[in-house]
Image (cartoon, rainbow, N blue to C red):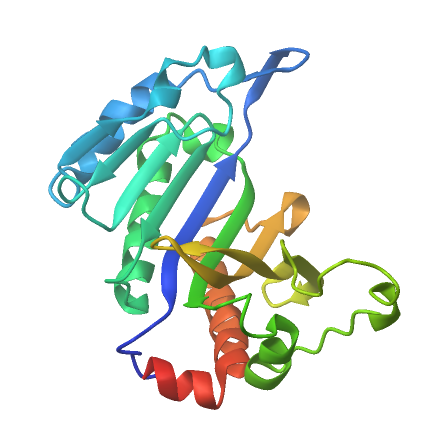
Length: 256
């Protein structure tokens, strides 16, 4: 079992589940049970998530709102963790207070609740996508330091940009933007693992943001609640493995 990092770089941990929507006409996807789900979900979870927020997207017509979160349930105003729901989508989100064992419990609770409250769930609830996503960030001065050197020396990720591109030009070598994404087939859980490095900001300061994601879609998605629970554990094991391998060394000591 990994020890908890006191200075973890986590920005947000996200679990997302999507299910099939009905398509009464081309380009229109709806869930006829969605309005009912909102109230039922609140009734089931209000002891832990009593604060309800209706998001601006809730005013969108049903015909174009598929897979867009519209309602949010929190422990209290501006507090985490939280659960979000929209037509065909439910998410569980946490941030600095994240601890895996608690987050896993909340995910399984959300999944089981969805199956419990969805009308005729065994026949009508068809999950088509599972995603476990971690967004981490570390402050980085792109003007002063070389991001490619940092990736190589601190995160074991070597990116060689052809240096002759800059010869005889008036182009600065400092990247104004950075967005590197890699995707690989995963066997356990069945699906794909994605790794992404992006130049961004945290608390108005420049930062290197990296995302570690495990995703399963279509036929790779497990069908039962028990198998979804297995997927959740396997996806976490994989993201956890990649995270600690990337930060091993100086960054790990900095985050401890």
